[in-house]
Length: 295
Image (cartoon, rainbow, N blue to C red):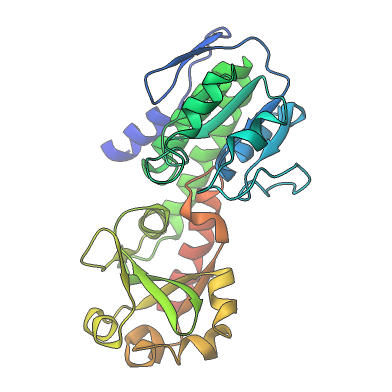
């Protein structure tokens, strides 16, 4: 087995130690927890992981991204504009968010406000970086919060099975890929090599050919110069531009190998945040690429 694969599976393997009531957050603050019963989970991947651990009955609130696998919890609002007052109103005994939720410039003071009000806040590592190793780290911390290592181990075993399927379904030659984020045909961007989109592309066996890390406005000149074999978009993004036919009318798309071959792929709207369904998403994309590129 390749060393990188072995290291990844090792990172995904969680310890089966006894329940730990003290969990150190990504911000360096240790939170003491005892069987939380009223949890506000910020970030859709946090909600998903809590469901996977079988602890969904503890959830009393979430932000707008926490809609899977159920969309029945009260929402405290947009993930980038979290209201401390709205969270406190739900009377949580624990708030769990990710470092990207609480980044300066978005919600930099929310953690301090919550803690000043006597609310415990556990900050998990960021959900927009770290790959599946990052998912495993967040899962491990949540397993400590709830004292359920066995449930966590079952999830990591499933990761291993899905990663094996991914290896068997990747194209022999990595397609050259660009991720386009679109609100409308006239409002679109190229995502670079940071974030969940890049992680998904690499997991599926593609190569992100964006020559930058962040996000740049889509221009015909830039896209034609990159000339990707495949273009990936969010489901809602592809819908917003009018499907594949609409995407082909966006700047430069029709002049690329991807456009000429109509190789434009829609992926789940949640992929900005790297969560437990990423192997599933990547496997679906890998199978599409293997079928379409014939290699």
